[in-house]
Length: 170
Image 1 (cartoon, rainbow, N blue to C red):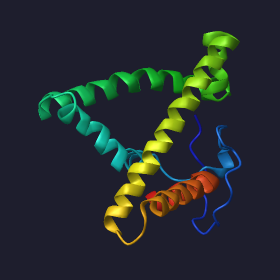
Image 2 (image 1 turned 135 degrees about the vertical axis):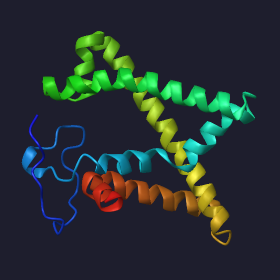
Image 3 (image 1 turned 135 degrees about the horizontal axis):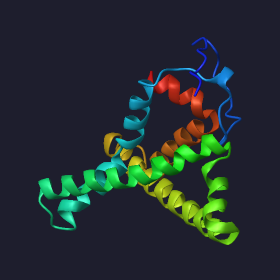
């Protein structure tokens, strides 16, 4: 695999054009170590903390047992997703498209529908917990307005994608 071609940091943020497709080599920038802050930042949020706290509050596990369950669950899930993710670049197609070969057209439609449902639920709960957190910090601002503000911030991240993420994580 070729190493990314560095680009100037002065390049203005552009609207994301590649969505789920590979970024061409001449447009890649950053270093592998930047991925740590990217993924840490994406996974350390209010929703993740609230979900992790369910191990002790809802399921009655000790902190140690809950932590072990979370770590083991993430490791097992990561192994299978990493194997699946490694196929996309080798085959030259995005994961959702590539899953047709493994699940067939109807099976892949079910997987896509499941992913849409899952990400809609994730986005909704992340917006609500983020908005409630913002409202707790700024009680003078109504909770619906805080949820809307978090939604607008998320929309900007979706529109400007890769470039905005690098600005925030580097």
